[in-house]
Length: 161
Image (cartoon, rainbow, N blue to C red; front, side, top):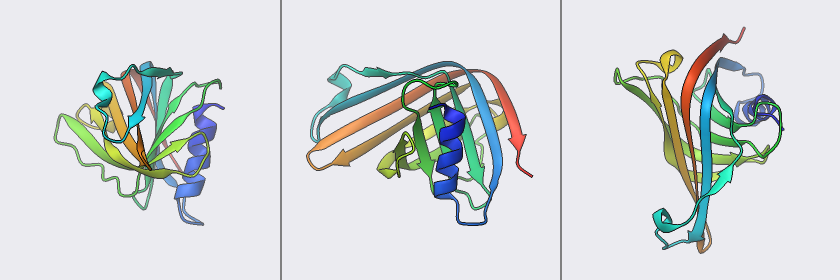
């Protein structure tokens, strides 16, 4: 599945009926995504990461502040990952924009509760040079960390009608 299809599916799940995506950004560039898993109490910094196929990312933000950053392969292959935020405000410190992550989506599955953040380095979303997202999911006695880093080569801004 490609990231454009997944992003559209996630927005359909996250936005209330009748709402539409207010803004869409597509980020192309060198992308590295990894996952680490272990016991809930384990220090995952000492765990060997497993690579996740990644080429690009898309950020969709609804008029209600719900947003999802989807990372994966543009033309399918691998399972896309979505970092969801229930209240993303486009506020910049002048050097970066921060998005709290409260759900993690794998493929088109409904999101699971997560804790994390996405950092968009640049004066605003349309001028981002680097994106770094990390989220942790705890299920029972296990935890999983998923991280994505993108060195952005180009940003395409799409405004929904």
